[in-house]
Length: 471
Image 1 (cartoon, rainbow, N blue to C red):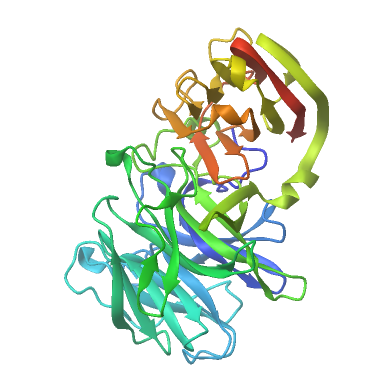
Image 2: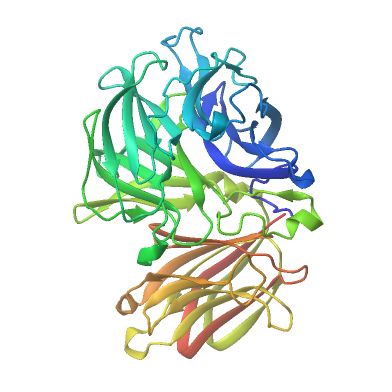
């Protein structure tokens, strides 16, 4: 059941991604890893993989072993390349600020690497950011604030993000905070600046949040706004969400780089853990492949604007197209009721534009994917016009917990582009320009690889329907 084209841990366990860094023409991706998971052991190490195209990854082994010192295992944090030796470990040393919790007290500790991120050493036993006496104090995200010539940290502290600055990555001063009391426990913060498609530059503050009590996702929430080095002022009080499905947690974004190595601030990449803490151990891959830990596809994200509102638009990373092994170009497919395709594949990239007549709306248009030959098991992904909403429904197949994610649509428009990535343990649906994505963890049985199109109580055209198999 190991996925064909999504990142998965070589063995045992993975959870949170750590923001990749760019070194020597490669992106170095670190993640939390537990080599003793199958034996019931606890704790996490930092394991490293490298990639040049965000699809194919080369495993490089453990960079920070768990329980390396008396402060316990390393949890989430972030890495930076210290180009100008601000911390004192040499030009271009790789610095990791990570959470450790000796005696259960979470605090931030500094580790450094002088071998291009292959291995790290701790700087003493004392934290560089001690806990002020709160239960949740973790997941530091550090960036270079070029406007003010200093380092900036966003730290997850329960229902707030604490803001800190430093000149040397060792001594940190509290300068502000961003508080939300209606999004559950905040984790894995993110902050960055991007150039939008209209040429303007904007800051984005984000965090993994849990809005389920308000009927919102529990994924990556973000706000566009203004940042002055100490405080962040959002453009709108309500967050946008990078994903509306059930399984895109602990996500991080990282800069794109040109061939010369310069950052391209009009494009970033995002990677999220394909799991959630409500059911972290509920996966048949433990029995079939002796591991537990996948990521959703790396995304290309761009900042777009409509009517004065700015938002992040996602697309599967561009290099994915070169991994297609066989392409089915089906053209414009007219559907009334149902149509079973003569295509069966466990992993593919499906694209089309759904088109319908707003004057004679069908009630429900979409796909049964991961479909058993007899049709009982499947994942339904489509548009319910009477809602009206788009949805991914994983209840009819094997999954961690049942459920259906929904996002509003406008049936009067009469068309909507759709892209669905199917792999052995996941379904991801991208709508329109990618402002809305639904990512779900699913576990179809071997042979549940058929596809049905449907347009109930009416007709629809599946325009330029293309299915690219990925092996």
